[in-house]
Image (cartoon, rainbow, N blue to C red; front, top):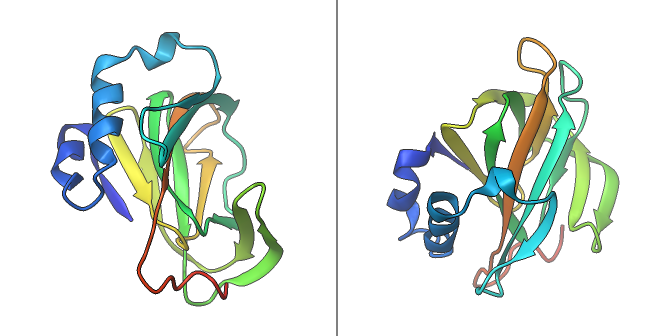
Length: 160
């Protein structure tokens, strides 16, 4: 996972080339004025969704895990906490669903990230994460989540 300020998003382009398009969209488009929903990009390995919701729960009970996509999560307004689970000791509670491209695990919490519109987080495949959590008090969040299709040599995700 990568957690940093938006000012440093372009620093990670050598690691994840799709971040160049993510950075361009964040810098050049007025994402807050767009309708909620999913949007394609010119890169077939990248799309994004703009969503709005009320933060819930004070503690994560389960963590979502993706096999194929990395998530770049950026708050456009509001604040929330995202808990990050332990990757090594997660127990699957909802098996992998190919349509949702997710499974859910119970795991001990490793750390919490306090998200606001000045920062971003990139969760790689297999990293347990629980967004949408209350950070101090409930509030309304508008968020963009970029989904980056990741490919790996000798794909380690096949047996999970």
